[in-house]
Length: 128
Image 1 (cartoon, rainbow, N blue to C red):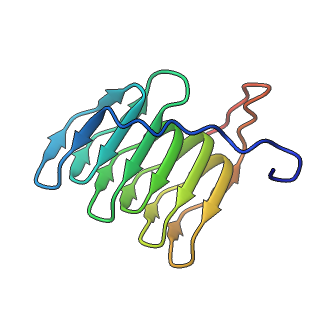
Image 2: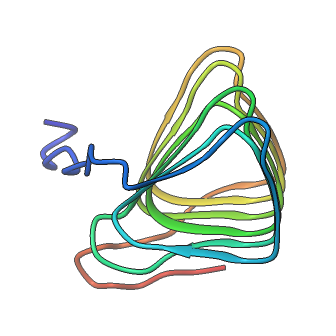
Protein backbone atom coordinates (compact mmCIF):
# COMPACT_ATOMS: atom_id res chain seq x y z
CA UNK A 1 0.00 0.00 0.00
CA UNK A 2 1.16 3.52 -0.76
CA UNK A 3 0.57 5.61 2.35
CA UNK A 4 -2.82 4.04 3.01
CA UNK A 5 -3.93 4.07 -0.63
CA UNK A 6 -4.32 1.03 -2.80
CA UNK A 7 -1.85 0.76 -5.64
CA UNK A 8 -3.63 1.44 -8.94
CA UNK A 9 -4.83 -1.55 -10.92
CA UNK A 10 -2.98 -1.57 -14.21
CA UNK A 11 -4.26 -3.03 -17.43
CA UNK A 12 -1.45 -5.25 -18.68
CA UNK A 13 -3.13 -6.15 -21.97
CA UNK A 14 -1.68 -4.33 -24.98
CA UNK A 15 -4.21 -4.24 -27.82
CA UNK A 16 -2.36 -1.95 -30.23
CA UNK A 17 1.27 -1.41 -31.22
CA UNK A 18 2.94 1.42 -33.10
CA UNK A 19 6.16 -0.14 -34.36
CA UNK A 20 9.62 1.40 -34.33
CA UNK A 21 9.64 2.11 -38.08
CA UNK A 22 6.20 3.78 -37.99
CA UNK A 23 5.45 7.50 -37.90
CA UNK A 24 1.82 8.50 -37.36
CA UNK A 25 0.66 12.04 -38.12
CA UNK A 26 -2.56 12.97 -36.38
CA UNK A 27 -4.30 12.25 -33.10
CA UNK A 28 -4.45 8.70 -31.74
CA UNK A 29 -7.50 7.67 -29.71
CA UNK A 30 -7.37 4.25 -28.06
CA UNK A 31 -9.04 2.01 -25.50
CA UNK A 32 -7.41 -0.54 -23.21
CA UNK A 33 -3.67 -0.80 -24.01
CA UNK A 34 -1.32 0.87 -26.49
CA UNK A 35 2.45 0.43 -26.84
CA UNK A 36 4.53 2.92 -28.83
CA UNK A 37 7.96 2.13 -30.25
CA UNK A 38 7.66 4.60 -33.14
CA UNK A 39 6.71 8.28 -33.50
CA UNK A 40 3.33 9.96 -33.10
CA UNK A 41 3.03 13.56 -34.28
CA UNK A 42 -0.28 14.41 -32.67
CA UNK A 43 -2.14 13.95 -29.42
CA UNK A 44 -2.51 10.53 -27.77
CA UNK A 45 -5.82 10.21 -25.93
CA UNK A 46 -7.22 7.26 -23.99
CA UNK A 47 -10.93 6.57 -24.17
CA UNK A 48 -12.18 4.13 -21.59
CA UNK A 49 -11.58 3.07 -18.02
CA UNK A 50 -8.17 1.77 -16.87
CA UNK A 51 -6.39 2.48 -20.15
CA UNK A 52 -2.64 1.91 -20.29
CA UNK A 53 -0.04 3.54 -22.53
CA UNK A 54 3.49 2.19 -22.56
CA UNK A 55 6.35 3.64 -24.55
CA UNK A 56 9.81 2.21 -25.12
CA UNK A 57 13.03 4.21 -25.15
CA UNK A 58 12.64 4.43 -28.97
CA UNK A 59 9.14 5.94 -28.78
CA UNK A 60 8.38 9.63 -29.31
CA UNK A 61 5.19 11.68 -29.05
CA UNK A 62 4.96 15.27 -30.27
CA UNK A 63 1.66 16.34 -28.76
CA UNK A 64 -0.43 16.13 -25.63
CA UNK A 65 -0.92 12.82 -23.80
CA UNK A 66 -4.14 12.13 -21.85
CA UNK A 67 -4.28 8.65 -20.32
CA UNK A 68 -5.19 6.85 -17.11
CA UNK A 69 -1.95 4.91 -16.64
CA UNK A 70 1.39 5.55 -18.33
CA UNK A 71 4.76 3.81 -18.33
CA UNK A 72 7.09 6.14 -20.19
CA UNK A 73 10.63 5.30 -21.25
CA UNK A 74 10.72 7.44 -24.39
CA UNK A 75 10.23 11.11 -25.23
CA UNK A 76 7.16 13.34 -25.08
CA UNK A 77 7.17 16.91 -26.34
CA UNK A 78 3.93 18.24 -24.88
CA UNK A 79 1.93 18.09 -21.68
CA UNK A 80 1.22 14.73 -20.06
CA UNK A 81 -1.98 14.04 -18.09
CA UNK A 82 -2.08 10.74 -16.19
CA UNK A 83 -5.29 10.55 -14.18
CA UNK A 84 -4.27 7.47 -12.18
CA UNK A 85 -0.59 6.54 -12.35
CA UNK A 86 2.55 7.51 -14.23
CA UNK A 87 5.88 5.73 -14.17
CA UNK A 88 8.84 7.61 -15.61
CA UNK A 89 11.51 5.03 -16.44
CA UNK A 90 15.25 5.88 -16.67
CA UNK A 91 15.20 6.97 -20.34
CA UNK A 92 11.97 9.04 -20.03
CA UNK A 93 12.17 12.61 -21.35
CA UNK A 94 9.25 15.04 -21.07
CA UNK A 95 9.36 18.58 -22.41
CA UNK A 96 6.14 19.94 -20.96
CA UNK A 97 4.12 19.79 -17.77
CA UNK A 98 3.22 16.49 -16.11
CA UNK A 99 -0.17 16.32 -14.36
CA UNK A 100 -0.59 13.21 -12.24
CA UNK A 101 -2.34 11.48 -9.37
CA UNK A 102 0.45 9.05 -8.43
CA UNK A 103 3.97 9.19 -9.85
CA UNK A 104 7.05 6.98 -9.85
CA UNK A 105 10.23 8.48 -11.24
CA UNK A 106 13.43 6.50 -11.82
CA UNK A 107 16.89 7.96 -11.58
CA UNK A 108 17.78 9.37 -15.00
CA UNK A 109 14.23 10.35 -15.99
CA UNK A 110 13.94 13.99 -17.04
CA UNK A 111 11.06 16.46 -16.94
CA UNK A 112 11.55 19.90 -18.43
CA UNK A 113 8.38 21.48 -17.11
CA UNK A 114 6.28 21.40 -13.98
CA UNK A 115 5.25 18.33 -11.99
CA UNK A 116 1.68 19.00 -10.82
CA UNK A 117 -0.03 16.54 -8.46
CA UNK A 118 -3.59 17.50 -9.05
CA UNK A 119 -5.85 14.64 -10.00
CA UNK A 120 -8.19 13.17 -7.41
CA UNK A 121 -9.62 9.97 -8.88
CA UNK A 122 -12.12 9.61 -6.02
CA UNK A 123 -13.62 13.06 -6.50
CA UNK A 124 -12.95 13.00 -10.29
CA UNK A 125 -11.29 16.41 -10.15
CA UNK A 126 -8.57 17.19 -12.65
CA UNK A 127 -6.53 20.27 -13.43
CA UNK A 128 -4.50 21.51 -16.36
